[in-house]
Length: 291
Image (cartoon, rainbow, N blue to C red; front, top):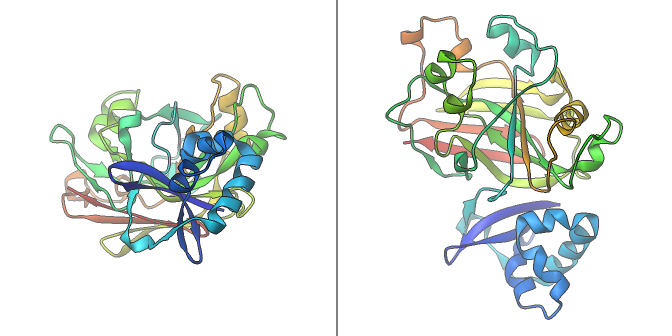
């Protein structure tokens, strides 16, 4: 199943992407007399409803009003995650282009919720930042509360996957050991265009690409992750309780601007007007323009 968030009359609606168009799930459940269906009209509570909620949403979507995808304004696929985790240096080739230091355990950092942005949304580059970079990433969407789960059961706690771009202010990131400020400027965590549930794709074997102004810069596959999806979910859960709708950016592959063999002032850092498109097979393309 493919799910998305979109704006309608300044409110966020959940849509189910079908061959006939986008079924407005929120409008359909709001018109329904069944109180149990109301929770399906918001992405976080739909996710928390699990398999039963997904089945019910699929049934409702069959009869719901269909909208033209091209006419919709996207919202972030999750608008109120309690936590946004990110994993650093999680592709071998990326670790090598960054100096060759290999992580011993998943290197976890975070972004604030204000870093969220949607497909097709413009990304303001902060005046106080510099050396702006992209990072194409597969993003895990947590499906149920996860605490101290094993690697063997970790996928049971995954709801699905989306596409992310872990935008980074490299100069700020490199000044200190803690990456938060360099990773969390407003809208520096776009996600979308949709969530694909885990039954529809294999998150551990997906081609991933990034284009900047039409030039292919990153070209890899999620099967090259140093720490795979079960390892990441299990590891984080040993320390932090994850909730439905929490996001995990799983790391980026080789091809980032900071890894280019050029002097820092010669590298093509992102600037206003640059278009960045991240594509993951089976999920779709996430497009943003810097502003």
